[in-house]
Length: 208
Length: 196
Image (cartoon, rainbow over all chains, first blue to last red; front, side, top):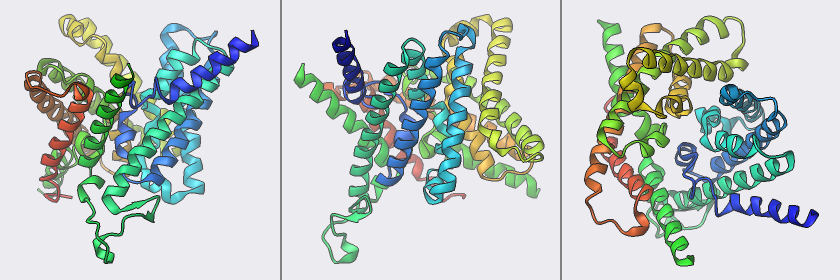
């Protein structure tokens, strides 16, 4: 019995990372994905905030799932999420004010991030505590990983740096690399994500 | 005269230069999901414009007259999301009662507007930019809604033609839509620097 449980738990965890990766497969949470991926640091901060909110709201929703009335459930989900987002926002403002400024309104916008409502609805409101937490962890890590990959590509091409460490020496410092300014702008976000999705589709098709 | 020109500038700025979809990445989910056909896109745009106008105005009033007076800024996000959910519910009931045909054609999209980040995003941006009078808040809300309608209609028009194009299989669907959106963004960047 314990064995089958272990398998389903690890399956849930891996599913969030790849088969059901929220951004690349389910196309959820596109807005923050596009908005905060100009550099790796804000992307990582955003990913961590989302993991925190996702785990906390999944725990609460999972605990109160038997008390919920169907027509009020979306409202309850949203209020739960809004509470935890307020906590995360205040925490960021207090401890990493620079990051909080860079991310701006995109931290409160976690409230309407479809990933969190989708997980609350599809997983936490039907499953027990452990599965909900593992699912939140897997989904959150999948989201963070995607964000970091996207941000890494964009930061590298836009400035020649990754995580603010110079990798390709730019022309302005007697190097050879001409930064692609467009990568740091909205265009870069849309096109990079589009190509990344295309690549994932290609890999999936090869595997099948 | 001065107020009028400030309002006009704000309107054009939020509608074209700082378009929520193209420069702030807000409302991408409906932008990708509903932009398949131009009539549906227009319907969605109208619904969003209506809700964003109402909720932008209401949240500004609540924020300015209640939360800031009593130092309750901590409650801001919870209040905003409640106002938006309430407005959407109100619009849904009104449309169902008085325009049943329109209600049927909107279908699932009406309740989904609650989680459209363009709306909460605009409320937060109004707050962030420190708008301090009611007319400006109202004009910015309407402009944002119209800007969203404009973006989603352009996209729908392009996608209707894209259906006939020969796209590589792995790029079909969302990827090619995103790339198209990227090129559209590039076009809209031409407006940047016009104002603010």
